[in-house]
Length: 217
Picture 1 (cartoon, rainbow, N blue to C red):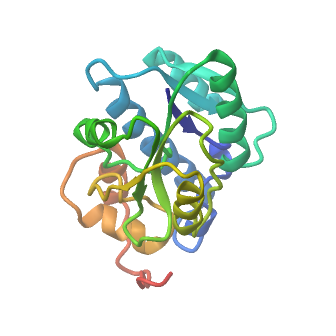
Picture 2 (picture 1 turned 120 degrees about the vertical axis):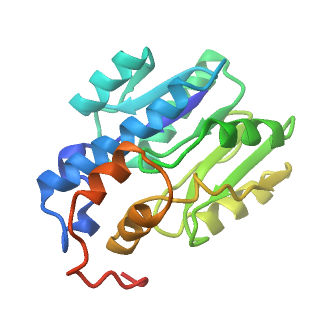
């Protein structure tokens, strides 16, 4: 099962506050989520998808795409949301989970195919963020093979946990999945990369030239 955790979008993307007000940050987060769910929904013969959330916009979008919802009443963050959703999957006898974040708007279905093709019979696939620090997709079989703990520097802990499980772990860089949007330099990159996703079209309407978009922001 594919799990997409979505926190409250009304407080989304605080690290973009130096250049975008909250209304714009929420609009961007909504556009990115729609890009992600559209990639999943248009993937032929895709596995079951569950959006893990209690956000009103995300609930509406999940319903539109016909995806299941795992209600995240606590809304304490991706780590707790995925732990809860993983327990639901285990209780249902679902043998694998693929966690996809809601802020990778350049995701393409062929990348998802690559993950499933690379997945061991027992083990994991980790797709790193472009900076090598974050984890932008995580496949586990069985579903709860090891806990996922998301944050700015999640890749090394995830890789260590995968190795500690004693099962194979495939590290699979993928260009679209690698692009997330957390800080101003990420937003500048999104604008510059080829593509016409909703998030890109939205960001290109904003004049970001006056802001210092240093790579270390």
